[in-house]
Length: 78
Image (cartoon, rainbow, N blue to C red; front, side, top):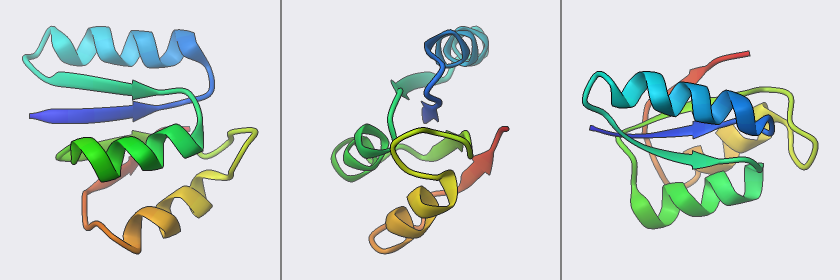
C-alpha cells in the first residue's frame, strides 16, 4: 500500500515513513502542502497522513483541494 505522509517537520515525516515501512508500506513524503497536492495528483497514494498546521497552507485547505479531484482516505495526525 502506498501512503503519503505530509508534515512541514522533516523529522516527523522521516519518523512516520520509517515506522510505516517496517510494516510493509511504501511511503511517499511531502514537507509542504503544495508538494502534497502534487504528489496526490501524480502518484495517487492509497492513503494520506496529514498534519493540520503547516506554514504554506492549512491542512483543512489541503483536504478541500484534494477532495476536488480524489477520494483518497485522509488521516489527520496533529
